[in-house]
Length: 410
Image 1 (spheres, rainbow, N blue to C red):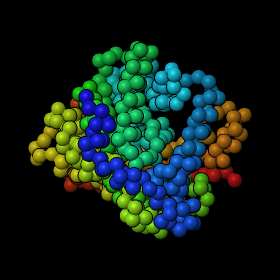
Image 2 (cartoon, one colour):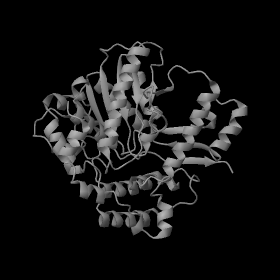
Image 3 (cartoon, one colour):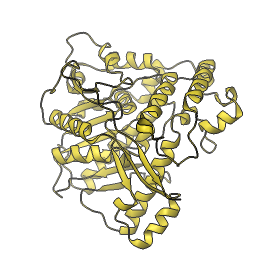
Image 4 (cartoon, rainbow, N blue to C red):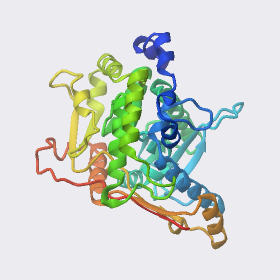
């Protein structure tokens, strides 16, 4: 099998240009914009941090509540997420994945490896929990969800994800009695689809997979991703709500910030590795007919951030690549309705949760009706069924992903 490095060496830019791409965009922005746009976290010189914003803060606070509930209750409930640390014995660096096992308590019938989108994929057990639990319930699947932080080096992120996938297989087979013959599926949302694509191209794991599910496949460049962040922020503000209100001060002037960031990125020449054009060349070269037969694209009618058409254009007409068209938007896989009241915390722990999360009480986002249509379509694909709707012209409905709401206790 090729390594991620070998694929990277074949398609990335010369070293000098890569170093130039890593230069900070902060110097090109006014000082007040630098502070508002959060281009840095700690001392990590990572321009991709600009994509997160208040959503990271909100999800991190929900994650704290989740962790507190898990540690306080002290016992695992069937059908809930378990944290697996897959690090080597001589390593001090955590290698975390989240494992969801069948609610029935029975052995799973298959395993799903999930990678979420940018920012949301850092907290998959929060942002995608409802989606993954409902798919798992329909298919009796175990789900291994692999978190990752946003970065420019998609080769590196994909390499770590594949490593954790393989370690999780070993852990589940050796410690949990999973059969080595269980069908394995890789499902991604948005950037998660690109990361799975890199992993399959670089390591050949596609031969071991029963299916590849790409939900809202995204292969944007970095400048386009800033535009995507603008659309993301606007969608989070539908219904007059500023997304996850109160978690990061007052609402930022999103349009002005994104315009400035786009100009700065254009001046510096920042880009993901692989770039959109590089990924096109990679999949054209590495995705053979056997891999293409395993892919199902899930495309939403009102998704302006989807790159499925670009992916399809990489292959000859008539290639065995199936597509399901669905009502919804880019964020339709995300359904959040979570807060302190949902976590079954003892009364004494509620005060701790309030302190740990800065008064963050509840958050909700999403359209449950649209989510359930996606859940059914993904589950049916895993069970061998054809797309329910091949063309997006068939009785397409205009539906929004939902409205964000959050409550902060003063």
